[in-house]
Image (tube, rainbow, N blue to C red):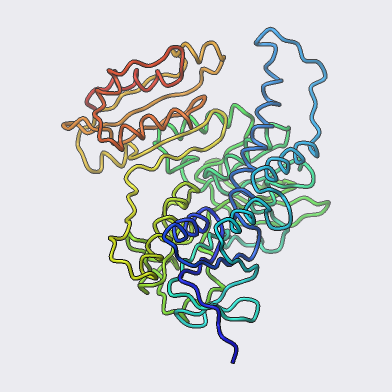
Length: 471
């Protein structure tokens, strides 16, 4: 029998978690083989974060043209070429990935790191053996970083129409005239902002009481206001009863909302209702890996599964589903897998998710870190809360971008920052100052005392901190 190739670490998946695992393992001298069934780099650069931000930038440029008169400029005959917008999207993706069939930039990185790679679908044969393309390879340790697939809700009639997932919505061949988006989370809201900017009738259907329901309630309400102002039609607390394929390329959606039963008619339905681990073809039962009741990995702080030489990292492990947390978890998993494979006695790295900022790229941006007011009140009777209206900032006035709010929550006695939440221009950049203060255990008073440059949006953090009082 031919000898089965053996490695210190096998990494399944090359998204943010997978690549970080590769780099961490190689930094410790471990031999590594990576398996990828699609394009190197995973979802973020090829299909999700990067292309979505590219088209959102294009949409923002088009919206700005519509407001040029407010700055004393006249732009006649404002128009767009949707195909060229999509070409810009692809240009950005190719710049990040290097283009090519599998992502030439990532291919070069793997070569530089002296990592073997296989294109194909991986499946466990036993706890140490992976089958791919009909051949087996063996690993002393294995890192599963296969990401997620869409969760499709069991809505009657949905499976009978050609609906779009988020991938199709971010890379359409043409602009649809009308669209219903099922799901009012970050992905649904960003898709809504893009299409409504180019004149598509957009209906956002949300089962929760507000859009972006994981955000602080004050911020969620302002986000809804911003989307409504942009032209998005929003239904919250909605029950989707049935999807009906009608004549002429129209889809009917039967809903029940606050106003009673309604029938909506649209050209395109987009499903953005969350994700589930991408594990269906892995054969985890043959590796002895067990999952929780929701079909997700249960990983320890060193990213181990219940099988001590098998690690999981990134979206697949059921934790926070962000590119930045996947990168962080992947490094921990790759480092610790290499330690096990090389039999080193060095203490393993452990994840620390106390401070994780996040951003939703609607207009204006929504950003947050730490506890919401509701979450904090579940632990403390009183809170220090500071707020500042973005409209009062000098930079907001000069930019004519005055919509928004900055909110900071702190412990009532220690005065340490528990959370920060904002909606406004450049919130995705400003939030990191609050995150750094939290990471260092700084009191809210320090933010209030520190000199901030004028005019900047970051001044709003200082002002919000200075206004904090017990509530």
